[in-house]
Image 1 (cartoon, rainbow, N blue to C red):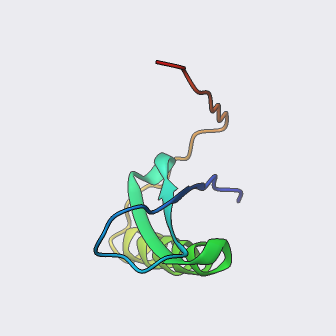
Image 2 (cartoon, rainbow, N blue to C red):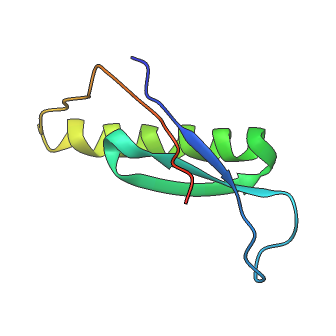
Length: 74
């Protein structure tokens, strides 16, 4: 199962430098971690918890098969 993750450097004053958000759009989840690897690890932990909760409640899991990312200049 491949789940896309979008990383975004955090520029908020209450975060120390080097932290990134890990957005998991197909699950509507966001977490953060130190560096890309820290954010990826946090995302993996969060996804596992989410999947375990769905399984324990016998809820279906449907994931989008196609992922697109774009930017727009304003």
